[in-house]
Image (cartoon, helix red, strand yellow):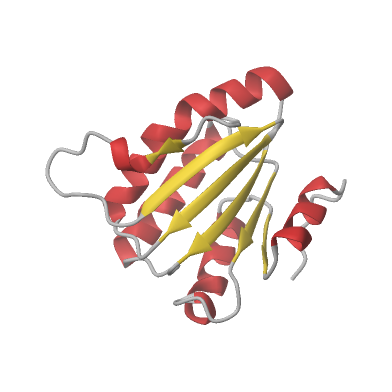
Amino acid sequence: MHSIASTKYYPYADFKPHGLVEFYQRQNTLFTTAVGPFNEEIIDALSFTQQTYIEKIIAEHGDWCELVEFENSCMATPGALEKLMMYLADLKRQNSAPKKTAFIIKEGLEGGNLLSNTYCNLYKKTGMTMQIFKSKTSALNWLSSETTTAIA
């Protein structure tokens, strides 16, 4: 059994985060479920909630990987996408970024065709390795492989 952290407990001040992000750690991997659509406040909740987990994984394993499985929608406001890029850049600057990130965007998921390239470009701009998959098995295989270059 794993301990699951969730953005639903984030103590927001003004505007409620839209979307839900929950995650748990297994060895050096953070398994994340992201239920969209998302607004920019969810990125604040995510960064606040993830910080302790990332520090713990780095202390225990040195580096880490992330598997993000989208449910319901992967749509996000332009503000959320901009804030996500700033969050990723901060992680990179602090040497806390994941070694690899795998997104699972299943066929037919709302926003999948529209935003897949956008998410890839966000990671690319921040110098991080990321790839999108249609299945969890493929994503896990890629995360466990030694290669760290993203496949186009």
